[in-house]
Length: 312
Image 1 (cartoon, rainbow, N blue to C red):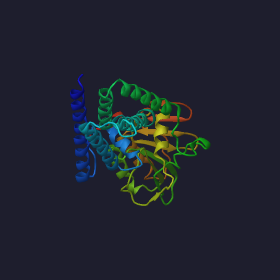
Image 2 (image 1 turned 135 degrees about the vertical axis):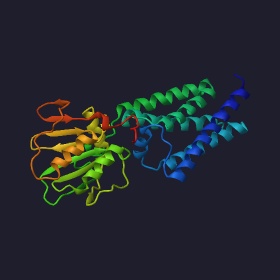
Image 3 (image 1 turned 30 degrees about the vertical axis):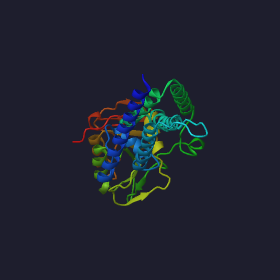
Image 4 (image 1 turned 90 degrees about the vertical axis):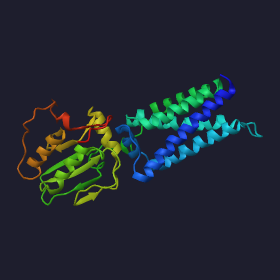
């Protein structure tokens, strides 16, 4: 490919990426949220330490720098440093780290991030064989480092995982006889319907355990937990091979019951948390049982942790 044609395509890719990110920033400023093509986008955003708006601003600055460097065709300075190559490597490291975290740690991916990452790969390939070799080295190093590291919360290795310590908050009743934990996602409509049912319970201590960061919950009498850790809630679901929410964990004297599905959970709550009588069984048949764990489910009323849930 001729140099002029190659640089034209690279400028076009940088321009398209800038346009895409700029549109995302504009939508975020107007609506307060980003365009999300799948549930993974929302999960990844909620796991980020900074607002996705700032991440997009950084991305816009990056692609504009690439565009103008290629436009002026002055890749080298007096120190004989290839600025275009340096900028491309920096961007590739950043995007590779984001994708590695999503796939290897969060076990989901953001489709919008994947599009930006693909554009970065194209820029790397077009810049030449040397840049491609650097790109392969970067991707290999980042992938290897993420695959051998663990990302458990600080102190998680030194003590058992606890649903109570990982809860966002607890709603204590005046005379509780039962202890329940609701594992949910902030963007799942089935989860919201379950939470709405919980406002008037009078015999359960209710712990709310979201799998992502939440700003607020419409639940009266909620006592917040300063050590809230959504990573533990996601890990618990992963260990149990549960890939959807809501999940209600009922702590009995000798075992745990995991109840899945909006209506199944609501039926249990109405029978268990609005009376002081012991709830011995449910009409639904368990999916799997052993001596310590029982899982009851209604899959039609759950939100997948990977695919977006249909909002009715």
